[in-house]
Image (cartoon, rainbow, N blue to C red; front, side, top):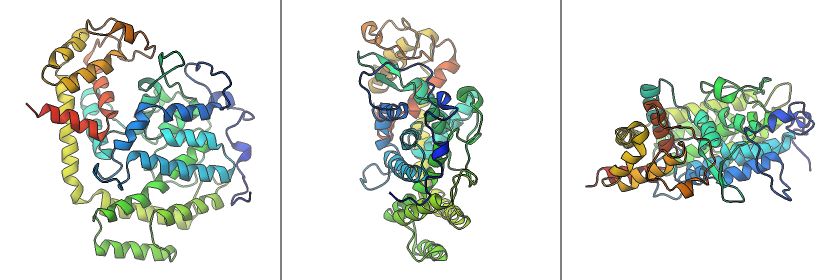
Length: 414
């Protein structure tokens, strides 16, 4: 099949012939064997993410617009599908590993908070206040695939995902907010947990990760315009400005299909191992101008302010109510007692927390059931309030919008 790029990247793709192959497929804990498994390590990562609960909840998480009643507004899950489509098309044409690209793309937003970036800002404020660090969804995504998300093995024992290094790296390195062109992978194999401390601090370790990083931005700018138009966020004057911007580069309208098609072609045409994964100067400039348009007329639109305030209240109140229940090693028992007032929230959090604490912490736990959880016990015995705060932040960040609203409504219903 003819390609635009001529598969110039085949010699640098993630494959067993690469010098760093063992680093790329390294897992923190070796996965159990699957007899007659025809998948490679990255394909296995893809299906592990696909079957995870965190992935399922993306269908009820805000992308930009909170509109859970409207079936035609982009959710976080649809955005992930767009990124996967864009990235895999580019990777295939360049001659890179489609399997690795797909696994990174499907997992790249698992760490996103409920209520989109509004929820992310509120969680960051809480984390900075209580733990002295900032929350960013790329690092939270790594935390989820490393320590939070669990899957049953063939014997119904729940274990951590234990993804490959290349996929974990692509998830924490995917930030598309920083304006840059000509992406090239870093050369160093680093400790992602200890060394990755700020958003966009490092480039991905693989060319496939670079493709996902650029594809993330290509995928969201056009779809955000489409949703804004559907919801009436853009005036006639806004649309005139957008039309003028479109005509500056080509005569076709700016919409999701046109943007994605043109930019996929442009990336494939202009990328090389020497120049990096890149757009031409013309389309890089167009992408940044569209992005500036979106920030001015969509992301900073005053119509989003009530939603921002609502997200802050909902997340803040859930956090405060759970924090008030801290009693050291007796916290889980205290949560059970408070279930008399808030049965949905308190029991759910106690059940969830029990899976990640040392066995025997709660008198109310189902010991037989919890024996099937051999995952990382990341909260120990809740010896410090800091451990408990982290647990609350993890719990809330994993919520869907709909579940977050459900437990908040329980707090205000007497």
